[in-house]
Image 1 (tube, rainbow, N blue to C red):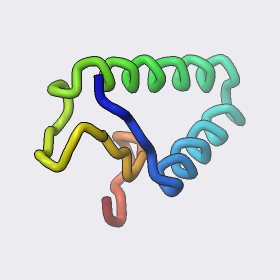
Image 2 (image 1 turned 180 degrees about the vertical axis):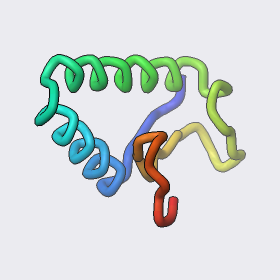
Image 3 (image 1 turned 90 degrees about the horizontal axis):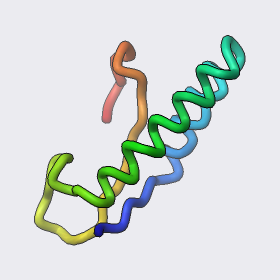
Length: 74
């Protein structure tokens, strides 16, 4: 099992997106958070399901955005 860590900016982006969803629909926000947490646990257990780099046994989440968004930069 690997260690999954998020940067402060990734956490901020995730929480801001979750807040936006919550304003529209509380139950959808709860479901989204559960889905993300499930995916995080899977990535910790099966790191090969993500893009692997040889630097070590830590997975770093550096950015979070909705698939419909076009990020300015990753």
